Amino acid sequence: MPGSTIAVRQVRHWFGLAGPGDARRVSVLDGVSLDVASGEFLAIVGPSGCGKTTVLNMVGGLIDPQHGEVLVNGHRPEIGAPDIGYLFARDGLLPWRTAEANVALPLEIRKAARKDRHRLASQALVAVGLGEFAHAYPAQLSHGMRQRVALARTLVTGPNTLLMDEPFSALDAQTRLALQEQFMRLWQHQSSTVLFVTHDLAEAVALADRLVVFSQRPGRVKAEFPIDLPRPRSVTQLQADASYHRILQQVWDVFKSEVTV
Amino acid sequence: MASDAFQATATQDDSLDLSRSAPNSSPRRQALWRSTATRLGTVLVVVVVCLFWELTARERWMNPIFTGQPVKVLGSLWELIRGNMLWEDVAATVEATLVGVVAASACGIVLAFVLSRLRLVYAVVDPLFVALNSLPRVALAPLFLLWFGIGLESKVFLSASVAFFVVFLNTVAGIDSVDRDHLVLARSLGAGAWQTFRKFVLPSSVPSIFAGLELAMIYGFIGTVTGEMLAGQRGIGVRISYYSGLFRTNHMLAYLFVLMIVTTAIATMLRWVRRRLLRWQSAGVHQMVQ
Image (tube, rainbow over all chains, first blue to last red; front, top):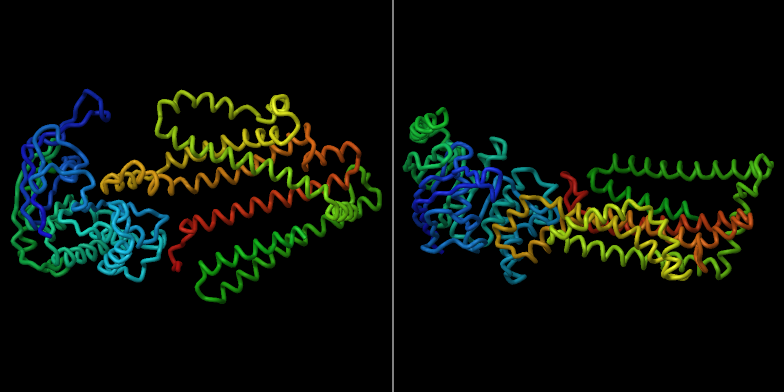
């Protein structure tokens, strides 16, 4: 299944200051336009509160833009569409379900056949290297393992769009590197389109094909960088790669001005 | 007899926990020994207290009309066990409590889930619930007796009136404590209202519901026995009140003892069910479940 195309056109959005219904508004997005090609890995970087998660949620159909439009494969995104896979910073695993039952959850909700559920879920667990932990409960797993289960849960439906909201930010540095590496390996085997929100520049440069820097709130696209690092990439090997550090430096120079304003 | 039964379940539970937390056998055996010793200690305390009690009665340090006498209590118990009355009383008390608690719990759980969807209605009735729940329910006994007479119904309503709020409030607390992350996940997966309830909200409120059920059962017995003591035809409370009025203290104590066994047995059963259902809660990091 080819990756989806994502188009964000002139999106403006605001929230009520004290929640929905409050007349005082906080503008979060101010005329954002983005195009993501099929199979492209786009990272959105920006200071906290710049509306990057809002864009992600619009593509996922969780939020409707107040102005402008968001299209996935030319259509308005539908909430819970089976071809969209979400991965959040917190794993959100259900503690009463085993690892495998957690991975099978999206299949259950989409009413997949019982025998497929088991097969697909255990395959996805094997893919993230947790085959032997199928019957473990989340409380028995480390943070990194839990996030890998969450990754398996995201991938189990074979989505052609991956929406990732700071998925590795809650992990310690070493575990984060391991998960980035593993995710790269898995993703490079498929052709899904990725929208990846992070505040970690190094992560964005290491993983993405293209990087978009958002300004402070209200978010606008401040700068855009193609990341011309060859694929397949290995995140660990990039750490010693000169061109990786050169690009990172360029991005950082732009980003710095935005953060210190 | 009772302490033996108690000891058996307790030791079994402990050894289960051990096999979880201790993968190698030497500390496991040590802990097993320790738990056995602890239970033997419990038995020893009971034996010593009973011996002393027996002595105070035999030596007339205290009047056995007030304190009873362990050996005679056992005699009363034996006599009662061989008769029919005790069993009918136990059945009557257990029946009233179970009917009351089960019906009240079902209503409490269902109403909690319904009202959690109808927040406005809940806001309207909440102060009424608080007021009713603050009312000592035993004070309703005369009213129930007036309405339903001295049969089963009064006791059922009394125990139900106590059990209902406990289960209702615990269920509400359980629903409110559902993890925000889980709700976001449910939404992102496109779960409908029923799926969100069935797969996310309900399982996450089970621990809280169970805490409510265990309390409700204990409170339910309070309701039933109080009702029986005030007026009734059959039941443990009826007998306790009756024998104490006749100063037949040993018979009364035998009934008290039976009541304690019955409530302990039911509480233990509920705890066992909870542990089975909520195994995931006690799953430790170093344990592999299979």
